Each structure stands twice: as C-alpha cells, then as structure tokens.
Image (tube, rainbow, N blue to C red; front, side, top):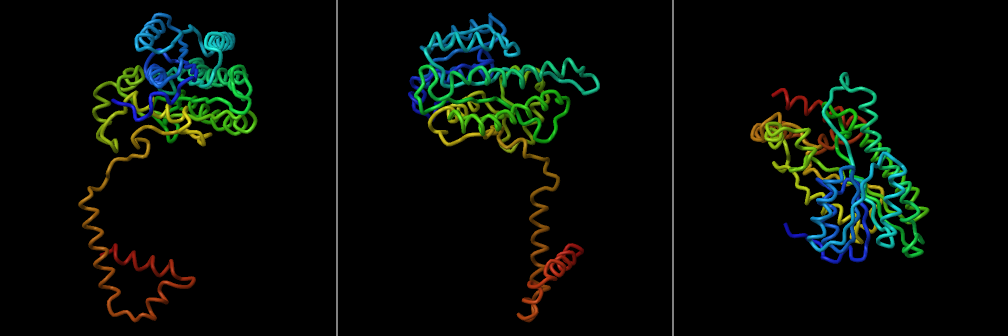
Length: 320
C-alpha cells in the first residue's frame, strides 16, 4: 500500500528500534527507512536480526543491527552507544520488544509473570532511561533547543480485561503509565515527546500466530466494527505520524490502532427491532401529548420535578 506521507518526512533522522527485526517492529523499521531515516534495530536472535538488516539494506535503507536483550541494562547501554557512534546521533527510540503467551492465572508462575514484565515494562523503561542523554535537547548531534521522540508499543488488553493475558495486561498498563509520566517530565525538562501506539489484532504477526489460531480470528472478524484485522502497515503509518513533525504537538498519548475493536460488543438487539421500538415510543409520545395545554407542557418540563415527571412518562410509554 502506498504511504500517504512524503518520502523525506524523516530525512536525516536516526531511529533505534527494539524488536525491530520482525513483526510490527520490522515494518516500522522499513517504513522509517523508506521515509528517509537511518535505522538501527535490536533483537535477541542473531539470525532473525541479520536477515532483517539484509532486507533493509536491499531496499536502499541505511541500517545496522545489534544483538541485545532489553532486560539487561548493559545491553541497552552498549546498543545506544553503538548506534550514536555509527550514525552520529539519535532522534527516535521505538520500544517494540515484547514477550507474550497464553496462560490462565492459576497456571502462570510468578516467574512467568515477571518475565513478561521484565521485557515489556522494565525493558521499555531501561531503554528510555539510557537513551535520555542522547535524545534530550543539546545532546550529541542534536540542536540545543529540540529534543527527540520516544514511541512505546503498547496494547489494548488492559483497557478492560482479556482472557489468559493477565501478565501482558499488567505489563502494557505499566508501559502506558511510563509513556504518560515521561511525556510530562521529559517533555517539560528536555523537550522529548513521548507517545505510545496500542495495536489491535494485526494480521501476519508472531503474536497473532501464538495468541489467536485461525479459527479464532475468523470468529473475531464478526464482532469487529470494520470486519477485518489490522495490518503491520497500519501501525507503521501511525508511528510515522507520531515520530515526524506531523505529530509535533502530540505528547503523552497512546494512539489506539485497532479499528475500534476494544470498544465493540455483540449486537444484542437487531437494528430493525430497535427501529420498530423507537417508532412505537415516538408514536406513543405524540399521542399522549396531543391536546395537552401549552402551560401544562411547560410545567412538565420545568422545575424541580422535571426528571421525575418525564421519567414517569417514559416508563408509561415502555409499558405499552
């Protein structure tokens, strides 16, 4: 799909992406590169990382990869230093590294719970903490009056609750809190914009393959407002908006990109039945008010008893 953004929208920028070798992280890396950025990606699996870098280079993107684990502070320090040494600066940090699996709470050990929080929450904070000295205004290679950008990839799981996802829900709730707190403090002190993206179910990602078998995704489409899964491209376009000057006044928000799914519920009453019920109520309303003097109507809709009177009237309509 063709991008709606100009090819040079990130020209001259340097972006570092954790989890940038696969899934959503890789698509963001590729789109950042296609729009002018130089890209450094981080991952734990060297084979996956090397293949991703090779692919990015083949597209004409300036790219480099670093093996690293966001759960280890020493890896975060090394990767950030190496990125700045290689490209001369850092403008954008994207925290896309994440871990997840299906587990009911009674079967999820505290160690399993901690593993996901260490990757998603602590890993995100660690990368942000170590990146501050490179992203703040006046940092090496940066303008003295302009800071960089942080994007944290979140989810919608914790907005209500999700089956078998207590660990990921807790982790992403923490990520959203980190986003808001850093946006407030680092936006104020260092001119760093910090935002998040909360993807819904995205087709062709490792997460969908692990968490939602094909038979589940087929049923899920029936309750989606747009009747489709999202694409990695959708998340990358949201990232381009937030990382570029197009999102220059957006700070401290987590942009939900899920087609409205987290808001949706099954349609318990068919639309035609609702229309019929509305017509009955409307007709009853007109019939009951016919011939009522204007002074009486005014009395019914004014004063302290307005809600009680109108409530009784509506209850009367519904009984019929």
